[in-house]
Length: 627
Ligand code: WT7
Image (cartoon, rainbow, N blue to C red; front, side, top):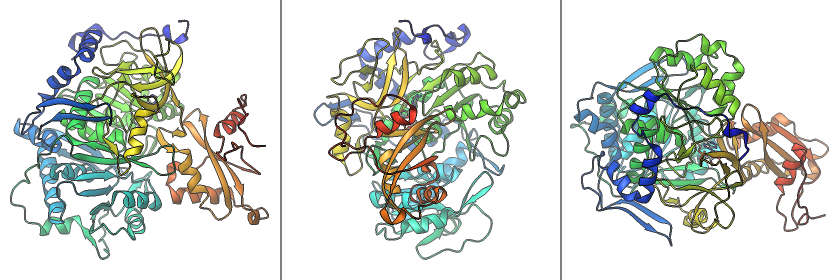
């Protein structure tokens, strides 16, 4: 193959390969897919179960139901906290928290277990038991992590909603999830600005009949003025009698851990359902092998626990591995462009898991920022969320010393765990996410499921089940089936890619109506639905437009209602409208007011035509377009 990516190659230091947990990827991979049950069973033995599994996997190719660790009983919170405390690590730092305004706090494993156990007690007093649902709408702070772990401890199901979402976005998730309890805070902070979370939560929860209580975690010192149905965390803590630690509730292989809403091709976000035990095995194993977590490491992942990256690689995966995790509120350029570099220096961070948009922003801000800090503690880098372009790859690799393994990890909310990635011991190709994780059978295929040749573009599929696979779409099993039937019998990710001669994946982006803005996943239909609730907008179409910094930006085309033609809405008003409907991450960057939208004869908006026009490319087959 003559593609340019073949030439660039980084071979890891022989010392890294020697010390690696996976010194020979090819051998391990071959063995893992020859006998996946044996591979995963071995790993599962490193975890604690009340009853060990009778069968590793029960896979139904008809219903696409993958039941992992059948017959086992266990608890992910117990594995993430109690296990380490019992092993003598109560005083090891579990969580180092850094707030947007420079606040710092450290939770040892002992303190994190104590706080989690108390929070679980409180939830129990509020009537939350196994299988009950709790929505968590908190900023990236220790209590966000504690609330998640407390739910897990009780066998309850959490649904974390990113604190940047608007009242309408939170409301639609509450309507679908119907939680018993909502946990929120008075406020969060971003770039020094106060985010009024409690006000938003109050607007969102109106009319949600399932809710019996809103727990408010105070962030500010000023006294809380609570409304009926609200309880403050300190009040609850002082009322509830703690008669020793709350025993973790053992759950089975089918018991859900969380529902996380993500964007799809329809206007309504889908609730991706993950179960405790399989998810535990998948996140434990991937965090262990990809980031090579050791007791001496300080691990910093820049995500918010409100997204899947935070669930799997801030909270569960690293804590299952007894890691020290740095959790940071805020943005990489506030209070200044050295934010992350100074945290790396100050806390001797050894593993830095970032995103392409963050790296490109840092690159734009200039070399002098990383050069001004001692980054010698770093030993492994990571990236996730969108393709990491070679220029950004080379930049972060160079400014951190030119030698570090850089794990460009490909995965999704649905997969729960990293699926395609290099390992610290495998060769690196800038722009490539490497090869599948051991035990994962990923491929690039055509529409009928046949593998395409190296260098050809096709669709990214997974052929066989994996432990942390999602189990259904909450309340919508048909939507789950669709993932497996579009390309019959294979899990279709929605992404396209090419593989080179060595089997390394080069991800090319989504092929469905999902766009990725700064790594955030948004559905074009979702943005369009929000736009047409504006009284002056009759029709709308949204596309992702390539952008050097954010990967893609949101461009929208709107058709006005006749009465609005004489007095068209201001662009800022439209942006503000979407911000209120969905949240800041969905705000359109460019708005064109047009007279009509290209549509098929059956009335579907032809977004690909809009995109081609926008980019000055050929418009393709227009035979289905109406006049
Ligand atoms: C989509 C999933 C899973 C963590 C965060 C995103 C894109 C993710 C990569 C990567 C190229 C990537 C894909 C995927 N994506 N990682 N390393 N290279 N693209 O989770 O919000 O569910 O989005 O993110 O398009 O389908 P998500």
